[in-house]
Amino acid sequence: MENKLDAFVEALLDGNQGKALKIVKDLRESHSRLDVYMQLVTPAMYQIGRLWEENRITVADEHLATGVCDFVLSQTEYDLVNTEKNDAQPKAMFFSVQDEWHQLGIRMVSILFKEKGWNVRYLNANLPLDHALNNAKVWKPEVIGMSLALAHRIPEIPDYITAFEKLPSKPKVLIGGRVMSSYDYTTLVSPNTKVIVDLYELDDWLETIKKNRRDGFDAQSNTTSIH
Ligand code: B12
Image (cartoon, rainbow, N blue to C red):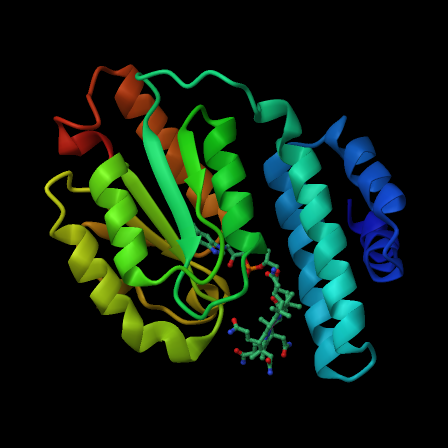
């Protein structure tokens, strides 16, 4: 997959949706979504970040690339979408915290949950705590996943965690994002909250949950399955 990275970055920067999509579609014939996200899409966006930082591309180039990337992610979600939701599906909601506009990573997370059979609400970027909390109160997801890319958001995170952990539905809170993979924040959060550094760790966690559920734990009534 590594040898497709440059061509993919080029397609993103050219605004070439067709070429970017073809690269991903071809790879999907022999690679999982997880691998495509981890080995192609994520490194491509990180590379675009470096080019941007070094002033080798403009803000407009980066916006164009982000738009094409988002389009490609939609296509990787397409075959998971159906009209039916069933009550047996565990629920998960995802968003990026207030003022945080980086959302491609949390979008990938939401798609991977969908792939594993979860009922997913993806609430996009820049979601203030009040609105996240209201949605969680009404919809009662078993998992709430949030994302932050920038280090100066860290001080706001305890407010989110405290508020979610007070919910009677006792959701598991997952936190991830660029800044989480750069530093070790695991000691800063309580047992009901989990910091996840990348999608491979997320996949392991999801597999454990799946196994627990198969073994007969009920996510709502028996916390062992999710916590
Ligand atoms: C695209 C982009 C933007 C776009 C975002 C558009 C969008 N719709 O998402 C826009 C233009 C809005 C933007 C704005 C800014 N950006 Co910006 N951006 C990027 C860029 C190039 C790519 C981001 C991205 O999509 N990465 C790819 C995804 C897949 O990676 P990821 O977010 O890390 O997610 C992965 C994991 O972290 C994990 N994950 C993520 N969330 C979660 C959540 C859970 C629960 C789990 C389990 C896992 C998980 O899974 C993902 C998959 O691998 C990065 C470069 C980079 N290195 O990321 C800079 C970057 C993050 N941005 C940066 C900066 C500085 C900014 C601005 C402050 C610029 C400015 N002066 O205005 C603003 C801040 C805006 C804001 N308030 O949020 C810097 C941050 C530097 C720093 N020291 O913190 C970077 C690193 C660029 C750089 N090299 O300088 N940006």
